[in-house]
Image (cartoon, rainbow, N blue to C red):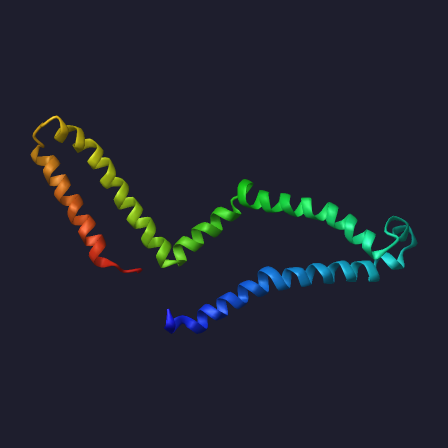
Amino acid sequence: MQKNYFFRTWYYFRQGWSTYFAFIFAAINTLTVTYYLAIERYPQLMEIFPSFLQYVVIISGIGVPILVGAGYIHYKKTAAFKAEADINIEANPHWRRMLSNTDLLLSSYVKLLEIIPKIKSNEELSKEEKQELESLKKSLVDQINQKTLK
């Protein structure tokens, strides 16, 4: 972790900037600019938004639910988030490793669930089952020994 101190700090900075500072700054900037450059210049709009504070309250009351809905649609109703998740798994070696570990573990669990009842009832395992277990064991040992993120 020490060798990555600079990059970890840089990542935290970017997250803080983009998630918090830039978001809040952009919201304040957008509200200010739209009110003072657009609303104040049109008397019809000044009737609807007589003060900056009322403008902020009304726009926030309308905008926040719309943006929450847009976020919900992005995550739950479109293929956009799935594509982002796919790219993250493809690009992140830790996620790829976790995915390959999970695939191997699930096949191990299935095999164990097939064999445990036989062992419990004192049935002899067939030669094929013993070979499958040995092959599965070898795959698990190989996966453990690789410990690579490539």
